[in-house]
Structures are given as C-alpha cells and as structure tokens.
Length: 133
Image (cartoon, rainbow, N blue to C red):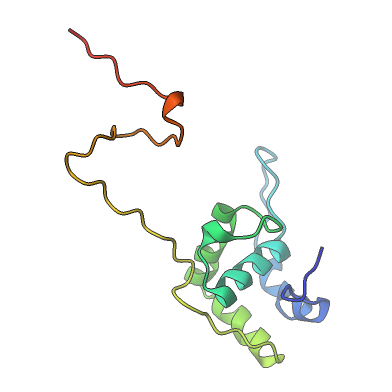
C-alpha cells in the first residue's frame, strides 16, 4: 500500500540506480532482505516527522532494519545523494528534529526497590533471584 508520503514511481526511478550496485547476498540463510523502496519510505518518514525509530508505523519494515540501512546510507553518502536527487525533483526533504532520536530511559534511582535486569512489565511474570546459602 502506497501512501501520499511514500515515494512515487517517478521519484523511485530517480534513486533506484543508487541501489543496483549493491551486491546481493550469495547465501540463502536467514530472513529475506527487506525491500529497499519500503526501507527508504520508512527512512523518509523518520526524516520528515522527526519521530524516533521506535515510533515507525507498522506498514514499514522493522525499526532495526530501517535504522541499520539508514546508518549504512549515511556513512557511504547514499543518503545525501538520495536527498539531493529528490530535492531537485521538487520533493522537499528537510529533516525535522534530531534524526532517528529515541527517548532515553531515565536512570534508576539508587536504592530503588526494583531488581536489576528485570524488564518485564508484569511483576507476576518474574521472580526474585534465589540466594545461595
């Protein structure tokens, strides 16, 4: 399903060639690679909204996948070229907020009653560590 904010066919044609040079995986293990166009739509969503990767709508590939490709594309200059090409075609991409920021958890207060390493939201689902005598 393509939404108004997703890349149109003409926009995809402008940037598609940037991804053809990437070698395909020769091994057939693991999960198939997420479609580049879907990942790019997710990256553009994060850039345009300023939301964190954890807020990525479910219509896109997983946040870790999108963040990993974003980091790759940013490191090798692909992202800058994508933005340049799309901006020259009339689509205005201007990042809002800090790119892909996620809300940091505040540190636990010293002496609090919570157990270290217990991350479950339902206390009935975990037990205190057994102490050896």
